[in-house]
Length: 169
Image 1 (cartoon, rainbow, N blue to C red):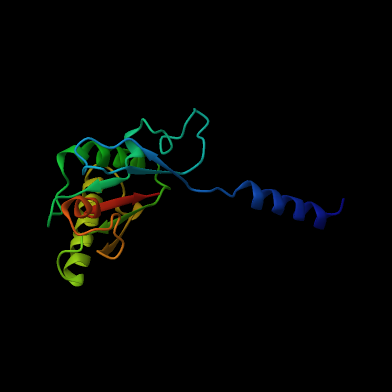
Image 2 (cartoon, rainbow, N blue to C red):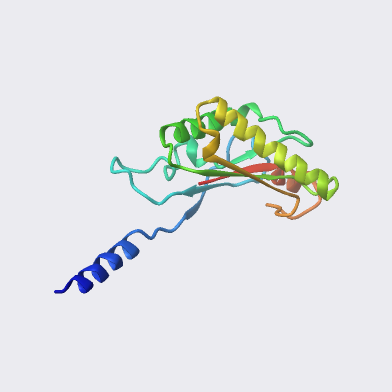
């Protein structure tokens, strides 16, 4: 076997061995979350060698990836503080991991106002994570305002599901 063939085999092994897909699964509804809501969990799909990756474990607080907010508020509700703490601890212990916080709002208010509110919500979660030990450089924020609703409708049930920050690894 010549050097060129060896390099092609190594490249193919790296290329096909390193691909991964993001898993998405539904987990139990979080206590205090809006009625009828299902929480989404997104995992890295990698095993750490010690069993289930904490990002994939449905029993881990890291499986909760959506923080819901009250109307016109960017204050983190008490029932989500442990979730934010768990994500901050995970980021602090995994300095190479990057997370994106997507801020969202319901349809009430102007487009500009809702973009700003989504930004305040994502920054609120980012600042809390940074205070709890995560590096600010690990956390990206983006606001979609009302542009990406989780639930269609113009009632409190839909609005409560759209006032959120999604945590994406």
